[in-house]
Image (cartoon, rainbow, N blue to C red; front, top):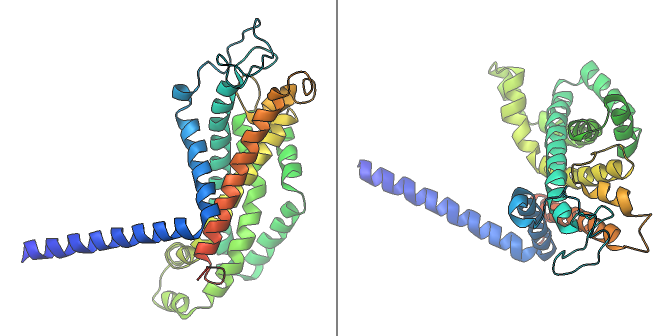
Length: 298
């Protein structure tokens, strides 16, 4: 009997895995643009993780005898005004963009998820106060709010993450709250209250799982916004600082001054930013179509 039970359980697990694989394949076939975006995201993540293995040179090594060289077999994407290999700096810049983008998006989305669901659940004065705070924070564009935070805390990777995270919290909380308001009125929430469950249990176990679809969509969108915001701050000289390689910092260092004499210094970092944000947005749009029954393709 025990062997039979184990066999049935193993068959159930196998069936679940096969069903998940079929759904994944169906998603990849049904959403070609989303698949392309997912591939770009995977390439970016793999590049950042394996930067030491991919980069042919150190991203901070200066070679003043090879300044502003055109692409060649020795330097596939050329060199910048300090003789540093552009390919190596772009590869390590992917790691910086991934760290800032993922950390900012994850922290901002999680805080927004908790605050948004809590605001909808408690309602009343709690909801009123939180929403007015969110209104104030959302009155400023993301980059303006990030500039203000950087001006207070200073530059650096950690401070850039904080500066981008703070404006993302109210944006996620507002979207999550709109979904949580409808869930709060569902009878099983009233049943949980009647059974004496605490507020934390109801919020985390009964409401949060039911707002995961908009949460995941917002999370993917925030990663692209965070990468773009980090590049913008670095370009303005208020983000990541030398010698840390970052795409926006590469543009800030040579995009204008060497645009005509060495255009590669500006072109390749710009292409890296465009492809990464494009890939994340394409995947996010496909994920929205897959998770939203109203937008799901038949």
